[in-house]
Image (cartoon, rainbow, N blue to C red; front, top):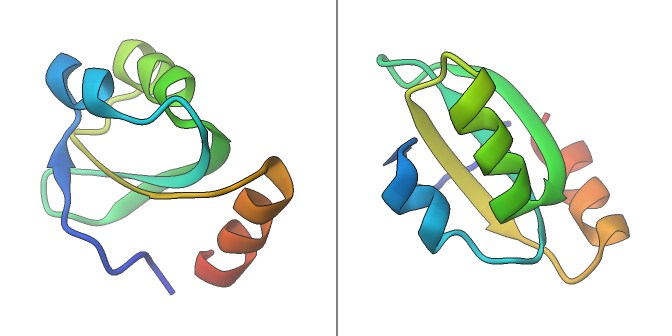
Length: 77
């Protein structure tokens, strides 16, 4: 099941406001359909997505560790 959080525009402002900690994230298209997801340090992962993905939206859940982020991914994929 997808995250139940509001979508944000995948832009420099959003990436700059992303926490510098592990988390699970979802990337969405213009209609809000999930096109990709991942686990990592959120700010770093979203910088990559901004540069290399065609996604237009993003949402995330913060985690306390990589292991916690992996558990979140298992719950939401």
